[in-house]
Image 1 (cartoon, rainbow, N blue to C red):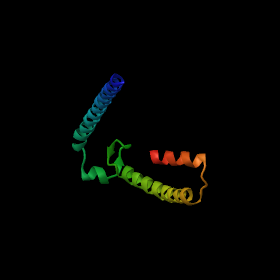
Image 2: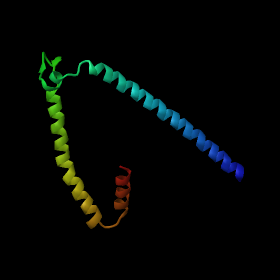
Image 3: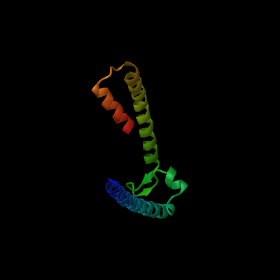
Image 4: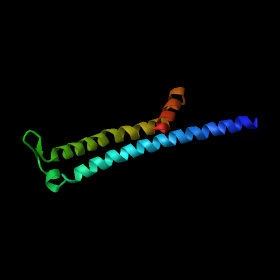
Length: 112
């Protein structure tokens, strides 16, 4: 019995090591990509680039419309999703009858 536990413990340690090395490689690659983009982007980043309109068929100029569009998109998503999320939570907690669907939904919400 003792050898079975030791074997399981050893296998667990091996897999933790494998997953740890995998996570380390992914984090390293992400760091390389972020550093590459940051070092190349710092040279171009300026106040004019952030606040001016694009020119020459969007090959020159700034990114103001993209920034404003992203802001509108985020605000719109919040305006739509926040009331739906709050109303859904109130309904599920206060009014919904206990069922398999409700239990599965709660497990899914907890996973999110």
